[in-house]
Image (cartoon, rainbow, N blue to C red; front, side):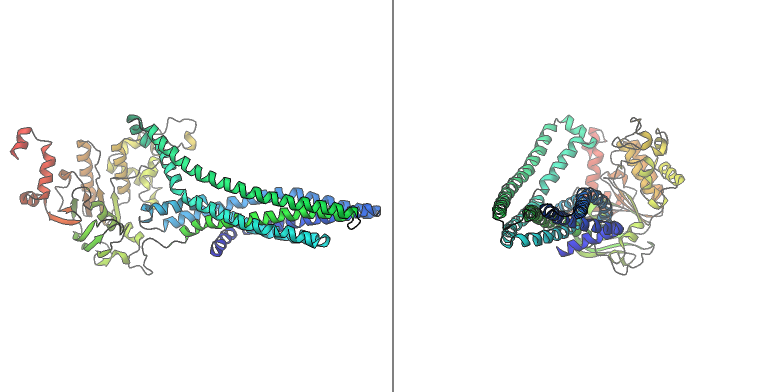
Length: 603
C-alpha cells in the first residue's frame, strides 16, 4: 500500500503543486484552531471567575472571536480546495489511465473479463487517489488536533485521558476491518454490476432496440438486469447493516465515557478540586478528543479502503504491455518479397483449443491471397496475428525475413490498412468517420472526399444536412445541432460498409491490405461495385482477402482453404475447382442457390 500512496501523492503533485502547498497550510490552521478555542475559552472563564482586568478580558475575547471565525470559515475554504484538487486530480488520473490502456498493443487484456472488472474499478477510483492524499493530510490534521487536546486533557485528568484514548483501540480495529470488508465486497459485486450495466445498455441502445421489440424480449432482459441489481444491493445492504451495528456500539461506548467524565468533573468542581475554567476545558477537551480520535480512526479506515480501491488504478497504469515491445525495434522494410508464417500454433489461452495448428503459409508481395473456410477455421485469428494483436505460442511470422516481434507494433500497423467485417460505426461526424483511418491527415478535406469517392459514398455524405460535418448518430448532437435534433443521420448497413472502406482508403497506399468480408451485407450490385473498387485499390499491393462468398475471391492469385487451423488445399480458382476438393464443394454448394433445380441436380 505504500507504493499506492506514493503513486497518489505523485499524481497530486503533478496535477496541482501550488494548490497542494495552500491546502497543507490551510489544513494546519484548521487543525490548530480548535485547540486555540479550547484554551482561550478556559482563560476567559478563569478571568471572569477571578475578576480579570477589562483589557485582559478584551484581548482574550478578541482572540476567542478570531479563533471562532477561523473554526467556522476554514472548513468552507477546505471544501473548495478539496473540490478543486479533486477536479485537477481526476483530470490527471483520467489522462494517465487511458494513456495506460493505449500501451496495451494487443487484444488479450480487452478480451479478459477479469481485466474488464479491474478496469471498471480503476475508472471508478479516478478521484479516489485524491482522497488518499487529502485523507492522509486529514490524518495529520487529526493527529495535531488530538495531540493538543490530549495535552489539555492530561492537565485536568490523566486517568480520564487514558480511558478516552483506550476506547479508540477497538474502534480503530473495527473500522479497519470494515474498510477491508467493503473493498472486498466492491470487488465481489463487480461482475454483477458490469452485467447490470450490460443489460441496461441493451435496453437503451438503438443497436438492440429492433430485435428486443420484435422478439418482445425487453421484460426478460429487464428481469435479468434487476436480478443483478438485487444481487449487488443485497451485498451492499449486508455491509451497511454490519457497519451500522459496529458504529452504533462504538458511538454508545464514546457517549458513556463522555457522560462519565462530565459527572466526575461536576463532582470534582463541587468539591473544589477543579476550577470552573478546568471544567469548561475538560468538557471541550473530551468532546474534541473524541471527535479528533473518531476522525482519526475514520480517516485511517477510509484511507485504508481508498488505498485498496486506488490500487486497481495503479495496477492498470503500471501494468506491463500485453505484448513484448523490443527495446531496440528493428526497422521494417517495404514489403518486396513476402510474409512467411512458419509452424504457427495459436490458442487464446491454455483453457482453449488450438485455433492454428502448425500453420505454414507464404503470402507473396504484390499478390492477392484469399483465405476461405468454414466458421472457426482460423481466418480471423490469422488476421489478428498478422496485425500482431496477439503473438503465436509457437512458430514465427516474418516480413521480408524480419520477425514482426522484433518490430514496434506501431511501425508494423503503419504499413497495414484494412476493412473488417465488424467495422466500427463511430458516433461522430462523417468527416471523422473517414479521417480516423489516418489521424495525421484528418484536416485534409480533399483527401477525405477523395477516399469517400473512391469507396462510392461521397455522393451520400455530401448530401447530408451539414455535409461531411453531419453527425452519423442519433445519440449525440453537435453544438450547432442542439436546437435541431432532426439533423443527426444514421446510415444504412451498406452505407456504413462503404464508409469503412473509405476509412481504409484514406490511409493511402500500404504494403498490406486486409479485406475481411468487405462486402458483407451488400446487395449483389453493390457487392460487385465494392469488389471492383477494392481490386483497383489493391493493385500492386499485397492483399489478404477473407470472404465466405467464394465468387468474390475467384480472381485471387492464390486461394488458401483453411480447415481446423491447417491448410487443407491451396491454388488458383480453376485448379481448385478441377481438384474437386473442399473448395470446389463449397463453391458448388453456394452456386446451387443461383441455379435452376434441374441444373443443381446435374451437379
